[in-house]
Image 1 (cartoon, one colour):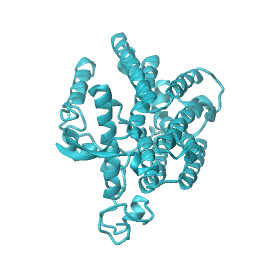
Image 2 (tube, helix red, strand yellow):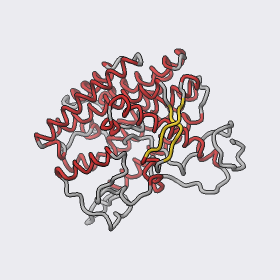
Image 3 (cartoon, one colour):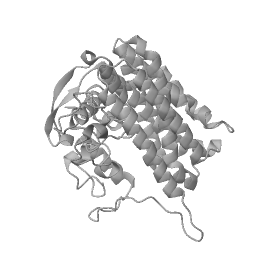
Image 4 (cartoon, helix red, strand yellow):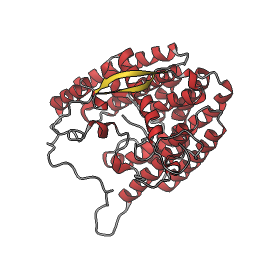
Length: 384
């Protein structure tokens, strides 16, 4: 599960977090039901935004159902979204995951440098791309937009001398198309232009934050990074992110939504938090002192009970076992091995967010604005 939107149950009201989990579980189940268990590996937090946007525009267009017990929920049932928005999210996740795999194969990253692994990865990517395209067509979305964006991104990485925003353009176009299509699913075509604008800003943020997160590692390994390729420093990248964040906020404010709270919590608060988190970590990693090694950002210490990852075939087999058991089995070196089911489902982890505790001001925490119906925390902020 990857993405820049990483909401945590400690960072938003419980009602909003339940809504978010309904979309998350709905996507995972949609992937399983239409494309098999292995496809659940592409469950993508950022891809869920198209499902959230569809429901926010027209609540009736996004029906829910009661799902059976799942190991990732501590063998509890749950209310999950079952709608076209979830299917669109599934198609987007599959196509982009296929592109990501092909990118790893082309770069020879890690295990992908081995021919047998690369061959299997190529087959998986082809299968996921075809599956995602089929689902996209079923919900009226043109999958070629995403496929072309992935191909264009790969082509641009081989062109020297491009500016940063030229390198982010394919990602912006892909996300704009996906966001814009939610207006058609919700039968609110007047929202389409604004949603496409929001998608372009979000796509730029996703691309830039990924580049900033990987900057130190890419420099060390010599891997491609758009910041290095375009000669962009962290200060300039931060300005681009701040501009995109402002544009995203303005676009969200203009949308005609029936249910605004979760959209605002994710696209305004959580993305703003992600920008701050990523650049703070990058700045800490970039700090140097004369005669000393580069400082690294603080990270939680590894559980001493965990064994080292042996890599190779054993590691791959254990990852497959984790997938087939819905995350119930965890390898002896997996950081999730000794965490409870509820902790594993936490989208970002308690250490990644500010726990407001009993501050009695949860509307400020979840960014709902106190306009009603966002939570059931019984605080005195008036939102419940």
